[in-house]
Length: 297
Ligand code: ASP
Image (cartoon, rainbow, N blue to C red; front, top):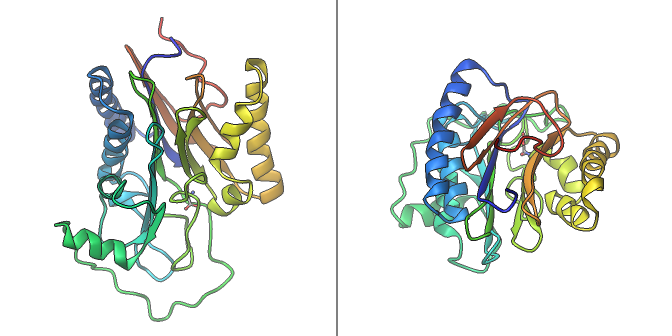
């Protein structure tokens, strides 16, 4: 069972499984199930999954992204292909809700692992992307103050292991509440908010980016999991979350697939909508920690 194609997604720390969200996710998971079965590549599947979540407007990514403290929406995204090891993060991009599609289009165009802001917008414009009219105006009264930076809700992310055993991860966000203009969290940082290597595992993070980056990012958890036996994994996952909370004072959550193909998801926030799609099996839940215990019957 463990080696079959698997897709996991999350809708960010603090996300709630309301009836409309549940309905939307049921439909989306049915679509993803079909794509998983048809043998699509891990990266394509992860991009499609995150694109659907971005388009829905339910979450703090894509259409639903929140503005920074100066009233402007700047989005971040990251994607990595665990087979080719191509990785790219884009940060502080304005006017483009389809961030997962954008990073997929840019992945592999250069060896760079991070691009930011205006020049990404310019690249997109040159390559036929439509930049939405930026209705929002920068707040001229904005002042940099220490109140900025509160927990956000609704970053989205996905990890996939496809039928050939390739892994991929994609994470997309509008950031956290009241953040300073220009602030970048973990989501678009390779090894921070997203990571995939067929030999190591795949992970997509959510939570307070500052705390996640200080603990060493999501890839640190994958490396830790690679060094322990099966019975120890639950403890390693919860120690990692406890450390982020107690030492770096941030909530966090993630979905991942370890190098043995085992799916896991956990969070230290009150809620985190997350789900799994495998052959003939789909499940979405709002709370829950540790390794997905349920196997298809
Ligand atoms: N990790 C994201 C950030 O810090 C926010 C989130 O996941 O809620 O930008």
